Image (cartoon, rainbow, N blue to C red; front, side, top):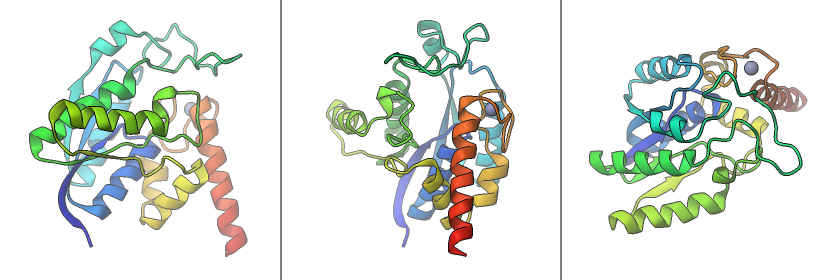
Length: 221
Ligand code: ZN
């Protein structure tokens, strides 16, 4: 049974947030999505998000967050910063300070505006890339802060929080969206849709998870 309530999905057009969109569409009667434009290297990301939103018939909000790039240049927004994993306890070069803090805050303000109590984000602690703002403790803390700030009772949902990438593929499959997520989404740092460039850290993570899931499926067949 779907809840007769409104929900907002933080949506990038990638594997994780698209899986969250299908999750939300199964749970809630009315779903809208929000994409943040922070001068990502690949404007393609926003185009993909727009296309998926149209195909899934959900209202798409695009919010300008160029300020984030101005304050915190990073490998996702600047060609002259190399995409690399952090070494010796450093954060990876793809880390954008404050990103989830700001995105979830703005998504919740938007939710309030449309009368939604539910905000969904695809952050995940299991495949922890070293991003502190993907941790469960951070999301719970922010949820409390948001409720206090607006004297309201929002619920920030994180359906992928404890899943590994293989389990995220499994969830997409259970939601009947495996092929859709595999072919339509954009996760790759080099802007290649579907299975991606096969070389960047995002593709590697996605592909390994996909292989693990397909192996598991084959074993259980
Ligand atoms: Zn790639």
